Length: 76
Image (cartoon, rainbow, N blue to C red; front, side):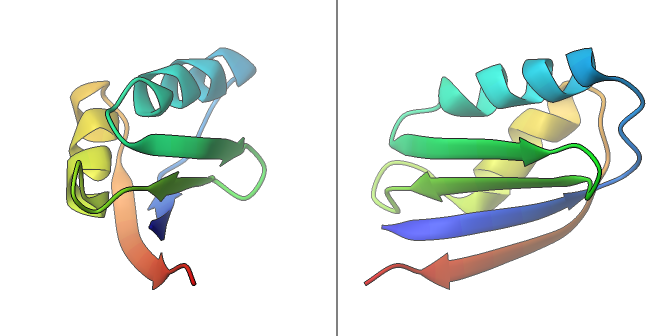
């Protein structure tokens, strides 16, 4: 398992946060999704055998939001 931390462009409303959270949660192998509205970040644990941080970033981009930075941390 790994944790993806995705820095987003500006989020303008709480419904944006909900839309992103649901889309990321629906990806195979993803759990513990948190969208931090004020920080403009998405954090999600994911199974590297089922998806990747880049794929999660693409899901968010496909919704029309900008992903500025992708960081991955390995979970013990």
